Image (cartoon, rainbow, N blue to C red):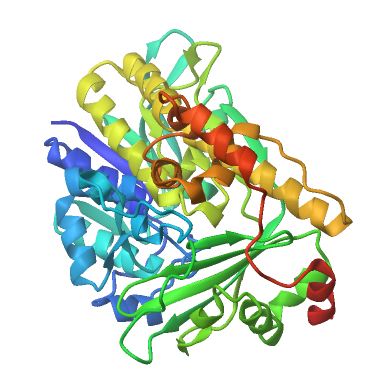
Length: 465
């Protein structure tokens, strides 16, 4: 049994803590925020302040791949989510009406996920974790302790120290401190090389409002959960306990659309999108919540084939964080946590091998999803910029665009598309399947890109003036 310290009591930190405790390790989690876990999901929504989680009351989503990880590794969390009011939601039911073959297949259950507000998800994970592992809240970590090196020239981390000077030794430290992790600075202070860092800020802004049902039923899904319009995107996500949220997503350089920070204008734009206007028909349970400064960022802790440090690994947003529009943060984080737990189980006694193998696992399993998310962001930024400038939108990724054009007309391609958005299969994996490329080419060539109905750019600017 090893002594493992996890930094950060968010969804990913607590999840990997529970996974490691299941392996028989002595796990302690340290969290800077000092507020205790609320006694109910409603108290979590109304009262819980998570100062270290900027998106705590923003739109959130758990993809099907993450639901499968929870079912397999942490079934007790799945049970707590459902008891807390989260819903089972099958995205395959969103099949477009343009597809004739609508018969359900035996494996369509893979598209089922669980929906919930971020406050409820955190409540469920935290309340479950505190029955299994030690969680100390209100503890601020200030730096790293070093010990004897496991490889020449590579510092080895042997624990952490707190802002109060307490030294906490560990056989392994797990950085689950999220997108605000200061690990690179701490590593430099400990004598290590800085990891590779690739920050990309496309300047996206979100405006979100939450609602609760007045009738006992959630709004019907008349289209996908996300619509990408020329100048903006719209998210409509079912939550828990009869709640949902609607988010508008814009580019910060679009001065005309910054008027959406005004609730009346925000409401008018959602109402002008026919497929989503009915999502306004509920009791508002929040003000309009803005979110900005959410850059993509990737880190790699093996440089030129050698780890910059041993004795510590990063998971989730502490490793790589993404634009929230795809709702991939928790899902990618759980993928990374599960893979890291597997590596720890196999290589804990060999710190150098653990660092190398965790990097290899990350690059094979999770980094491709980060790159895929970055491609979406680049394409979306190019489309919105073209709309602002009044020119045709460029197509940066031909294969991805062709699948998007073809999938509303073919059940197999629609399911393949769902696999890509549910983190079950990468687009290149779907397109490489026998016959799929030809099928996409035939259908994409026969159909033009059609935006969902919404105001034109000129109408939009006049509406928001």
